[in-house]
Image 1 (tube, one colour):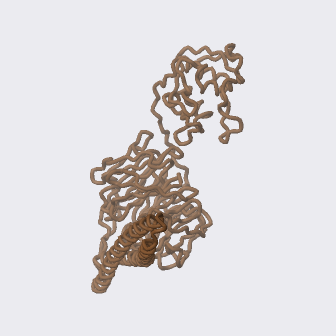
Image 2 (cartoon, helix red, strand yellow):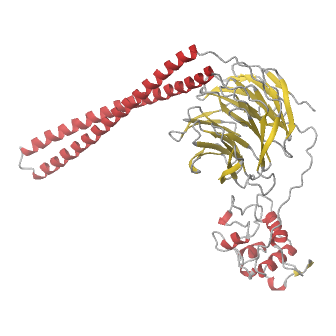
Length: 580
């Protein structure tokens, strides 16, 4: 390619000079045009920020145009809005890029304008884009913050990622049981399967499945009954509140019904009085209408009262059932014995599958930030997405190691958190787009969006009964949402920096959080009884809890994983980096 820099004579009206070009080969869009547009145009004209309705990421999208019509006319540069705007031609109202733009995008240089003009005049062809390649380099030594931590269901094992390496610890014995290389890039997400047999790790464009050489101990019969008791207790609390609200509704409607009946009786009396006075012909007509209207209203409110009574009776029945179940389970818990069966904890983890290809062509877009097994362990949800471009969720068949579904652009920015509802029918996701979104798994349909955070949603947790969701925000706030009513219940504050994770503890109504302010907090979803678990002075990135909520693990910038019994303030174990 040769460029001769001189003012193009036919563009004397342009404010910016355009070079005269001698280009032996046709101008190549991917290598010559796309890069210059990226530096000066597409920061403000892309699929997430399309100012003026114009997306300039492909020739087709430029031809489609925006609010001002088509921006690209193949073969006619001087009729193409993108060229006229780029040269600051006086025939157009807008300049590209505008003066003082927020992204500091520069004007195109004379030789760039010449290439743009020639490319358009040659037909504005998209060309053949060469596949992007990633040139991997070794991560620097000493890069060991913990961005991902996972805990087995019973709290026996905790795993963390440091750099591209996985570390697994025995919590009770307070010792490391395994460490192994996993990825070329940072590990940003980890998860144990519900049975503890699989550990999955996520990095750029890939998820790896690691199988243990032993089965992690399973919940005892007593533990299973205790979980059922916890759910029954949540039902009792829920139905008690519903009954109280229904009783209030019944009382209100009773008053309305009494007033309506009284109004109907008064209307009949007024009609009788009018009939005895034939000198007022219009009065009888009005009185007849009043009798009809008041009778209709009394009938409507009467039906409403019947419905209110029926609703109250149903809720009272549900409450009685929940209380009876709770009492039965209390007796069952008292009679059950904890399992004393000894289990050998895994010491070796073997890679059995890789999901995704770990490159730019992977079905898992960009970096994996969130992993979550379905309650039955059969499906793995993966949250990823290119920052500021979109947030994708993929679902994988764990046994077949195959892709089941892709929900592209489920968020408008990277997905940062995932959690399944207790029945596996819904998946909650939080993203850098500040939103909590709920997807129906069977259909892939987005069923609800919750807005309110002013910064990234960094953590998501369903309450065990599936009625309430908590979210952690980079706006230093935890929000509690009523899934049933589709409303925000509570704002919890008091954090000094980003709230990086939130987890409901077992079947309780209490939450555990980690934050950039180095503190681990446990607090009621109604802001009751806040408790502080001691920590070191480090930015905490992540947290995980055991299935019963008795154990909590957190990791952060100093590379140490700390484990607590959630009922005690001091760590029960600390696992610092060891090198093998």
